[in-house]
Image (tube, rainbow, N blue to C red; front, top):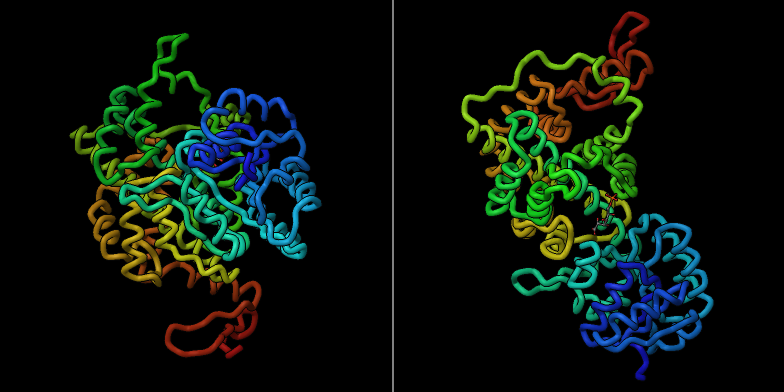
Length: 478
Ligand code: 6PG
């Protein structure tokens, strides 16, 4: 058996599928799992797909690898990842590469890279998106870590990555240290926003127009042929069309309306708060999941808090459906614009030099947020790498402008009739805030100066000022 070019430790479904993907692409793959049964079952079930080296211990695993060794760790984020990395570092040698392909928090990745770098090891925190199927058939891969490691690792990752329609692999070196996991985190944040927006669109058609899930599935399938074409829209149609075998009802009607979350949306929002980047779409989506799971509060409020008195009524059903499509598209552009702002802010803060257009490029296939309009985002950042916000790119500005009247009708109709549409509403408010000539922040500055002498700046004279609020109310230069 030749020395393995790559090793995968952690053979739960994602690790297992990544290992199979490498093997199917002609690499000899050393495989290891803490409980050996899982490793043996992989060999028993899929050993014929390529060259695997079965390793029962970490020592065997490390010994099976060609140098410099490349090890992919695919275990639970947090403590379990630290434990495996600690054991590995005892066995590896300077120049070896450790890839953490789990959904790690980027600050953990930064810490781990420092520790491993001190021992001469290359640590690569890599985002991998596309779920189980993506891992096997081609995920979108977002590796960070030292640029030198990409020379060895890049070709292997690019081989197994999804390929966009133009044939380019959905993988690139994102930037040093935590950059890869940061970008994956924001990808997931955008995923949350996208899913919430789709959920709100569904709710408006369901609760508002009273359409059946099957009919709404047809609408989503139709939308999937246009600008909204994306994996999430496509699977929405599939989910809505599913009938429950037990009851014969639409499956969506028998699933509890409490959304789970593993934490990446929350991480995105926390990081955005630290960076001072308003990711309102992602935040609303994350909070909407939290509200859905607040069963005690919802139980207490149901039937007690009065609803809307305005009945949902539209003169033209088809026109309203088109309005919802336009509102969904505009809100989605806002969510992406905000996500890209956050990536840029982190890149500036940490000196990662992330090429935003390349991020849109590697999200075009394989990942959960893959969508037709990502090509347009790449084009926008190619036209102007320093674009202040995606919303002012000439293509997106025109696209969103075309949908603004519909967006306003949808948000106001939702508010009037009591259908919660937090992500639609906050995205529109963000859009209006950005384009506003004056914001009430001037008043806030006045209030801050009143109670805390926090000072303000004037629109007409340079300098920092304070009004003597408790004295004669004259203005002084601070
Ligand atoms: C992906 C997904 C993947 C996972 C999410 C789900 O890109 O393949 O984002 O990472 O499905 O972690 O997250 P929640 O459980 O928080 O919805």
